[in-house]
Length: 213
Ligand SMILES: N[C@@H](CCC(=O)N[C@@H](CS)C(=O)NCC(=O)O)C(=O)O
Image 1 (spheres, protein in one colour):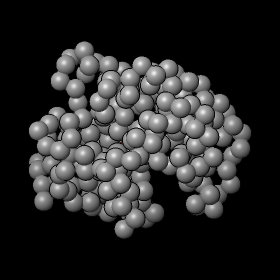
Image 2 (tube, protein in one colour; image 1 turned 90 degrees about the vertical axis):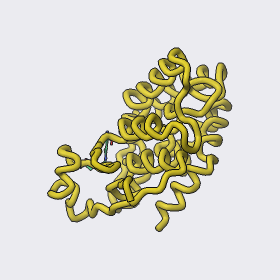
Image 3 (cartoon, helix red, strand yellow; image 1 turned 180 degrees about the vertical axis):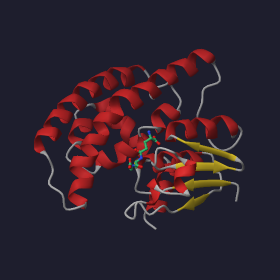
């Protein structure tokens, strides 16, 4: 099989890539990486990603890392397959890029910290730091106020169609929706509808299904 995704399905960054492949209805092979054993810091994985983080990605002789670069490669290369994830118009493309940056630079640092404290730490038997949770809940609330204003104007972040800007949020939205942070989404009707829409996509359900095996 030409396309390979290396990494465990519980990783949000791996999920982001798998969700994109599912949106595009592409076949791929999921290659397990034993992170508990530290295999992501050793050869052969380190030759695929010198930073020792999952996911790594192969499509024939092309090798990539960084989940958001991988999703963009997939969306451009397989533009005519599955669901369209990119706007055609350059101005719409620029607006989508703005919101992809917002996700990577503003949403993800907060979402990752909250996910680690509220979801991952309890799973690993570690103690949640309530001060970190409180600080990041406050930050997320303020950020979601901006999202609420944006989503009052258009159904999705990039405009009226679902794009990579929305998809990139899906793993954090999934994990945080199963936590007390969901109340921050529920308090904002447009954000709440957007979260529900993203998590109800068939490609996302298939991604979650795969993560259960
Ligand atoms: N910016 C990277 C982040 C990748 C990342 O943080 N991967 C985590 C799992 S979700 C990882 O490999 N953590 C182990 C480590 O950093 O040593 C991407 O989007 O691909």
